[in-house]
Length: 506
Ligand code: AMP
Image (cartoon, rainbow, N blue to C red; front, side, top):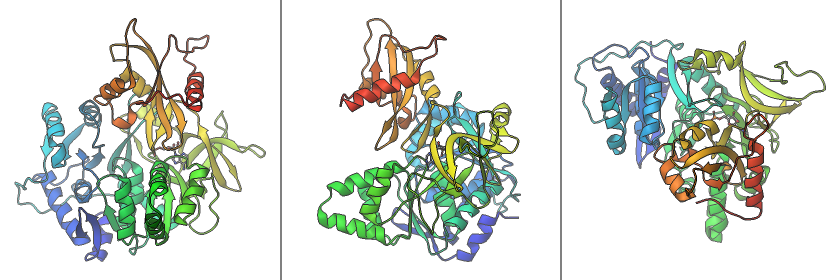
């Protein structure tokens, strides 16, 4: 039995599925190439039986070919960030207990030694199959399909496990709400180790028989140019990307501005999510593009849960109503559903879109649920079934440029630096990034550290987006009577200095 995704696309056989590096690939190409890669992964066996396959590819045809190959071979896809330094990669590969590692050629030098050291099979796409078998695995939709790593309030990142069925529910809900069809054409510029690019863009497009126009990474000019050149219908991004596109528009000559604005007007829909969209940004983008951005809310563990309407009024500063098939409720601090008269509480989500488990972490999985309701940790208010996100119930989760980062994870790494005695990592509000990562620290006696050397060192240990970009050196960290660092005090210091125009950043 083949999975619904692969059965469906047969219908679109001759249509272009993907444009990547200037080449058009049809659905037939994708089915053939992913089958060949699946056979390479299977290496003569019939089914990978949920073996984890870690893969590192930038946005492009090979990413999708490998993702589909893993699924068709019966494996669990573990997409990893291409910019992770070796130390982080080792953690993700070990934590997922990957059996096979696949990477694009440009990353081979970094990735292959890690796989070899860990005694794992390293696969390059240029290899040819050693077996004559042409049989693919028979996959039930309830089987595990993907592990996405996400940061939480405790310890290291956790693997969020979804089955094929859950992924399908996440896709179908969005296809219905945003009326995807095979006539759609969408640009894909987001990193493909995160739910936004994987599900909302790539999977929804291919499920619909639409066209996925893949650029290898985000580059302001390249995106504007592609908006002009390609005949796109949809665009989805995080607020930081809209902010950077707007900044480029502001400094462009009037003629270019006109061309860029007209290019946006051809689209049928532009969507923002993965972090709060400032109302000023929504308004600015509307002036530039003529589009009122559709803001939605979701999370790695639940897919998408809330969305402004495709048709009808999109309320600024709000994330709309529950998506098709998704149940949403708010609960008070004791976990009780809100009663008449109260309207603010933690968002909890239930439905076929919710993940199965945190990989190999049964206790954390149990703690994340109240019966079948997943506890998001986000706080919202609701009026007439329209939700507005108010914040998070933990200061230790930072959202920067749409990426989720655990302050505790960053602190743990920083504490291994020889001159850092104590440190506290906080989020500081920022117009472009939503939040930026800042650190206050106490150094060992007579030691010095500046932001440049901290960042250079940090990038060898952590993905670049997790490394603090603001540094404050203090004699003592503010603490309460219990000796706990008072993070809001630290945020205030950074905020006051930013307000005064004092810069600590690189
Ligand atoms: P991730 O799992 O990386 O997608 O991060 C999910 C988190 O991003 C959510 O729990 C929210 O804190 C935040 N988030 C996503 N969409 C929005 C939004 N539209 N407004 C505010 N926060 C959002």
